[in-house]
Image 1 (cartoon, helix red, strand yellow):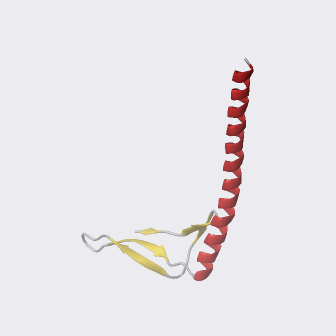
Image 2: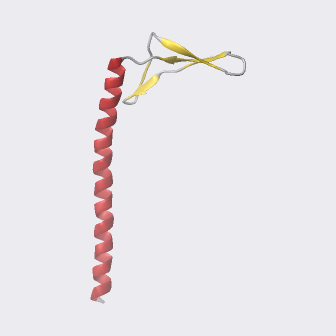
Image 3: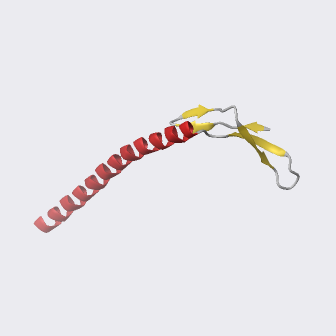
Amino acid sequence: MSDYGMIINGQKIHTENTFSVLNPANEEVLAECPIATREHLDQAVEAASKHLRVGQKFLMKRELQSVEKSLTQLLLIQKN
């Protein structure tokens, strides 16, 4: 049987309260999975929001670089 934890902000979290995941064919317990608390949920949402903002800034920078490169190429074509 497998014992799983939650990953919150890159850290594996185990809880005292778990629920069983059953094989529907024979109802054998396949794994015990953690039951998240409200605090776990808040931590996960905070971490996800933080990383989303960082990711958006990175993507925006890359998109701007791509547009800048395209404009430069167009200007060079028009110049010639």
